[in-house]
Length: 322
Image (cartoon, rainbow, N blue to C red; front, side, top):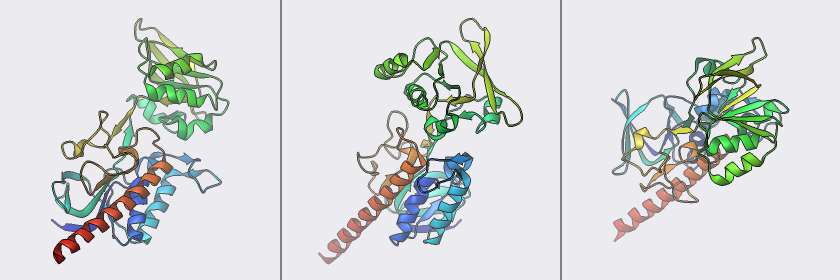
């Protein structure tokens, strides 16, 4: 068992965690990033990225994360391959324990564990990800300009995705397994008033149909939840919008979480319920969930952490002098 100690410990290695590392390293905090189960975060499973600033041409998600990782290492970040199984936030330095027994200690801790989209769990869905099936209209809607698309879900996310997609498509279908939506009333009113959106009630997707070759998604096989009747909807884009799972299971009982399981932060900051612990990226942001906003909050977390440490060290020096 080895103990790794640092002034700034970062849990998670997506855009939020690596941005925090870059700022923390440049501030001389010699951060350690524990990369977790999915090094690089959700972007490593994303192919074409067209909305990250600074690139005129489409870039690849894994390449972007590789560049962020290299930049973080170049300025002095240490990246560790480990999965954390236990946390102790009762006192500083904070202690995290990896599944192999290694201990990681940090004077400050940045939580950047992200969130994962919920999926329907179909084999055809998994096979068609990136080939017509997506869980983020804001990320991928641009690729479906002028095409027929469908959104699966009935909550705020689904309605917002359907409305957003009308910027690119004049044929959007919302598919919901019940006969009423769970979304807020104002969103429902906007949805029902939109001429380019139709709703299919009491329908579940049973299969995402692959057109073969380079065709990608060509249709959805549907089943009526009341009658059991099967039908087919021809579409070129299918957006699964049934919510997200923030990766906060490890933090329950240690940090304040909101009703949906996201880390609660003080408005306008990345400060959590434990002084010296900061959260950034999708683990605390259920509204925007973009790579660029994750990177922005990663910067905020590093700056918040730097200021916290400076204040704590000043206080320690003052107490020692008294």
